[in-house]
Length: 100
Image (cartoon, rainbow, N blue to C red; front, side):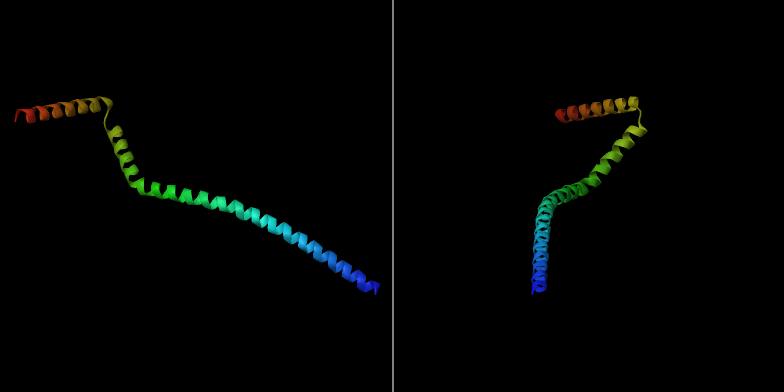
C-alpha cells in the first residue's frame, strides 16, 4: 500500500513538473510570437521600400551614367564654353521668335 502511495506521489510530482515546464514553454512561445509579429511589420515595410527602389533603379543608373560620362569626357573649360554657347543659342532663339 505504501509503495503504491509513493508511486502515485512520484507520478503527481512528475505531472506537476510537466505542467510547470509546459507553462514556461507557453510563456516563451508567446514572447517569441509577439517579437516575430513586430518583425513581420518591419520586413513588410522593408520589402515595400526595396520594391520602390527596384522600380527607380533604371533611372538612377541612367542618370549616374550620364553624369559620369559628362564629367569624365569634358574638361571644366569645355563645360563652361558649352554652357555659354547654349545660353547664347537660347537667347538668339527667343529673340528670333519675338521678331516673328
